[in-house]
Length: 339
Image 1 (cartoon, rainbow, N blue to C red):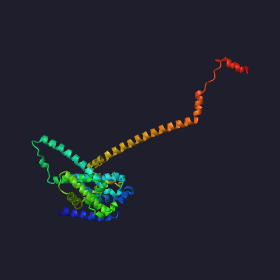
Image 2 (cartoon, rainbow, N blue to C red; image 1 turned 135 degrees about the horizontal axis):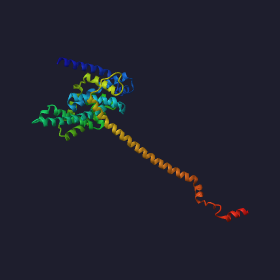
Image 3 (cartoon, rainbow, N blue to C red; image 1 turned 90 degrees about the horizontal axis):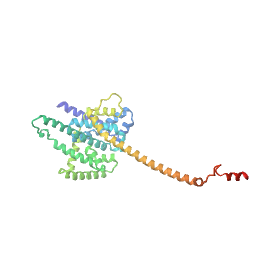
């Protein structure tokens, strides 16, 4: 117990020191360094992003999945997606919001897959056992886990202008002033949008017959994420190494990500690749149609221009009556000869 407590304190101290060094660099600067910097600079910047946003990401994964093992696989998958898709983030001030969305969707996918797997396992057990009591599978924390999952889904459904300050203030523990600085908003706008977000969440939770206030639930998530979620150093190290490898920036032989994390990453990216392919095909078809129309219009225009320029000649040629062929009208030939 003592060793575990000591390790926990060491992790907190190390992360506190690292976070102090991080504050001087914005997410935009870190992403730029990761994308365009040298391999060493990229690794330092990527580690900084993992340390800065890791507690929030791990908190979301744990709140949806419940188990540490599944949550850590999803956590790693989220940052592997970041390593692969960092260049596609349009507004680099909003990395926290981007990571939240990825973490939520990957965790939900993992949860659905896990539920299906457990259902199949239970069916096998039920077939081989005389009786099966599903209550044995119930954990006393399941109710709270379900409640957290519902709240996370409702946060994900918020319009972006409300979701972003909720993520920054409630899930990343930033003050209203800090969030306003990141977003380049007035502090009053942050406060107003947080209040409106709480109202929306409260009404949606009431429709789900949940009587707890959104403020209470968000505060509970805030305490769990900011104060309870310490990302283990081993998870940070393995995630950074795997991320550098996935991004093609590894300076040496890097340890691979867990197989489950790789599966989750690919499952997240695959539908987006398909959508981009379909969008590309649609664009080609549309452009082809436009080109066909333009080409047809061009030929019509050229035809009209041709006829305008050479219409008289064409008309003369069309009305031209050829001379009689020699031998068929001898009189004409003789008349010509006589002259």
